[in-house]
Image (tube, rainbow, N blue to C red):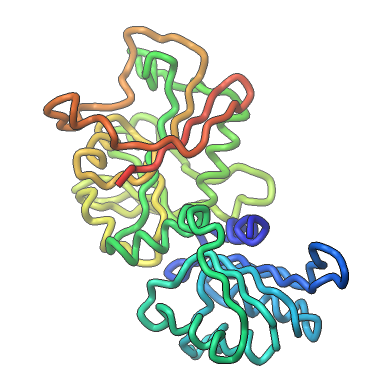
Length: 321
């Protein structure tokens, strides 16, 4: 399942409104543990082909009697763009399906698993469920809350500053952290900054990693005014629910914009890069977020990842509820 989840990350940020699913087909090895991978698939850009269809096409006849590891329940509805994946798995003659989590889409929601079981396929569900929810959080957030998943990115000094008092901010973090931030950009359909950040920095907000340049996200500006060419303006954080084809938004700045999303309780994930430097009287990472007392600040965030990127440290937090 870990391998299937890794495959699902390949097109994260490029499959909306479809989920980014990963699929692995393993042929059993006689008289010994494990097996041989005969098919790999992941949802393609734009949502089709689905991961299962891609993996089955690679496996061919080797899928008969095999075990399928898939990160989301195979779909049960036919579409003008392709057949139902649950039907494809039945027709291929797989023996077992291991599924991370069910599909909340009412066109599938349990029906895909039922179809597999009715055909005599053994189904195991909930294997790697937590990791699956994390991998497909954009799709699941859109289904549950009617809006994209929001990641807030902050690159700060040890004392929580994002720039000198003069406004100079390049570069607080080192090249490894900046490269990781570009990889994160490639996993989002859209990236957002505030009007002040746009006017002060004229950011390009593209992906500058070799081979991933084409995955630069749509550029959003939090502003009630007109958007410059190549940008889209939204008047308030709440308006992200109206954006079509976007399940993941990366908010990159500045302090007022970050605070606006936190005040609106629209941040699902925090991406914190911290450099081993002290700035002192500089610009704070956040403006007022409307916190009335310290008690309300606790139990809001859960650490999901922490590691070093060169001399900098990255910490990833997810909202606790």
